[in-house]
Image 1: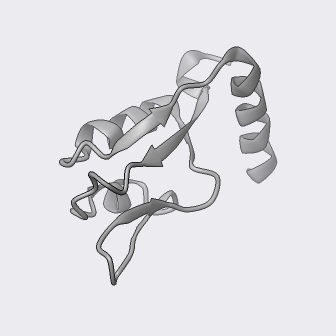
Image 2: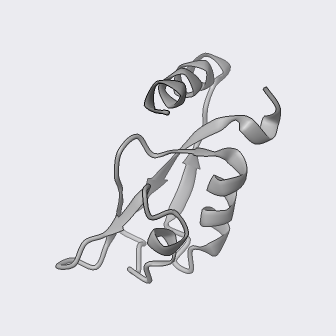
Length: 86
């Protein structure tokens, strides 16, 4: 498995989210902006390939999205979860 294929988990800091919806437009299966609060949330597992996760982090104007740091042990678990959902 190459580093481009590694799955990482993303999270939203609801305190800094400005509700622009960029994340939802880029990764609609991973993010949902609440109609009432206007704040984004991760839906499902929050797993994305590293390159896609980095793109959504970079595109967030509020800088509210981050990649959860994975240790080698949890990275293996995250990748197994992703394979199970495919």
